[in-house]
Image (cartoon, rainbow, N blue to C red; front, side):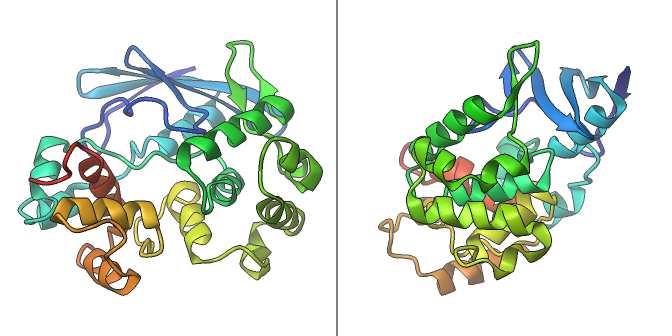
Amino acid sequence: MEVVVKPLWPSEPPYGNLPGSLLRVERGVARRAMVIDGDLLLAEAAWRGDVVHLRGDERAIERMRFMLALDDDLAPFHRAHRGDPLLGRAMRAQPRLRVQRVPDPFEALAWGVMFQLIDTARAGQIAWAFTRAHGTRHGSGLYAAPPREAFTNQAALEACGLAPTQARTLARVARVGLERAATVRGIGEWTLAQLDLFGHGRYDVALAKDVGIRNAYARIIGARTGSVTEEEFRAVLDRYAPWQGLAAAYMIALGWRSGGRY
């Protein structure tokens, strides 16, 4: 089926293909393979003016709408902060910026564990290696994320390059499930924030312990990376409540530019 959606806030194709991401964006069309209720499905999104054309199974379309935040009204955030001295200019330059989500909450949690305390590019390689080995390949060539049961195999995770400590944590959380994730040793505030932001679509998440975003903020203000404390950064993020997650996305976009300053 095909559905035409006019987003509640202007949208555009996501930028590039992030490390470890299973979403593919080519020539303004986003594609994602996923398994829902045991069925391997493909969803596609194409931008035409101010509307987005979605194609696929009804369940896959619903997940794609969530992934692209098409039904989220971001106007309150932009009204409140478009004049902000820190992020205002970036917001005005990139008003269509979104947080890229994933179709299944456990995938967000699993990827969060794989990206713990590790170089982003290396973590992406590990995620891809595990996906190719244990995920399902759609006829389009795209891969759907491995099922939760695959992550219970610690040896298989280590074989793809994940450190033993992280592999053990991920295997344990895969066995106990999302409801008890917070009780697993190795699942802390940072990883749960990844689950909430990318898996549940919450914007009001604490990201003070995210070193990458904190360093992006440091570059924006012209400070030395590593010099901003968690407490200082949490206070900065709290200025944007309940939109800390979206504010963090703008910090990443701005902080990783050359120089990272206005």
